[in-house]
Length: 365
Ligand code: UD1
Image 1 (spheres, protein in one colour):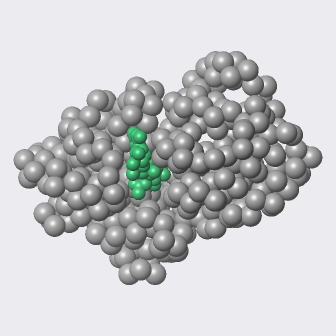
Image 2: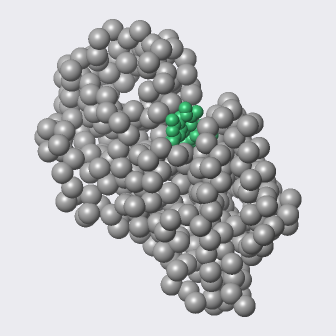
């Protein structure tokens, strides 16, 4: 009997996590795989370009849910995903990260008694005002296999009563993709196209509701970026949500040194990140990628579910303190930026460990 594995992806940060797992499982004759895209992200530059660059096969099923409130989006994914599960009867459904697609798919499966594997389990910001924290907590409670990226994940899960035998400390799967594609990214031309000198620019991304949904906060951040732009040119690929918010905002004219551009593909973004002087972000994944790349990262959040990027990595939590943001950029320009180490098991072999754990679980090894 061949084990039928579903992968459910929906939003940009899922794609680079699923790609190595799909590749690792493709090596087995005992498995067949179905890739389900919920359609949470649907713009070409938020989804399709990632499939192409990451070598992900085209989705077998696209639920095409699109945008909506959290309740609408989650409910829509659930009601469109349930008949697909009933029809295909997968043996295991893998969900990734902490987006609405993750919790929606996990909940459908738990109710249908279909086993769920959560890739990137156990991360906690301990901030329940963050939608992703709710998604993480719920998904982990109803998952059967929990693949953690670092030991803090296991500790959090144990504290929440998750049985130790369900947990597999496998490392950071997104770093598998980074390691595989960094040489390809470095052959790209994005720096030349944007007329940037390596290590002479900062890279910015912001999309969290806590930063961009409140007009005063967003205006203050843009003013701080303007100031920083006087010392260091900034490139800011703008997430569609942030683009919407910026339209309604009366920001004083942006300095030509702060360039707002469309969201970038995986390879272009990786190339820019690799040669940046500093990364300013509120993303989870970018904190990890910059830690791996050894690039100082100023994280525009009050907390992080990825504490290892602070304790071992290059990230500093800046919160909403824009004076500190300006000061830290200055320190980095003076050559006093934070140095870090690469955390254990961020070695490019995480997907292989996930595949082995799945084979053992399915008694296939
Ligand atoms: C989602 C994830 C977040 C992740 C982020 C990465 C949740 C709760 N949040 O946030 O954890 O860090 O993805 O990008 O799942 N939009 C488009 N085109 C798209 C997608 C979105 O225009 O392809 C716009 C829509 O106006 C939409 C808004 O962006 O309403 C927000 O999209 P949504 O998927 O709800 O959340 P993200 O902010 O992208």
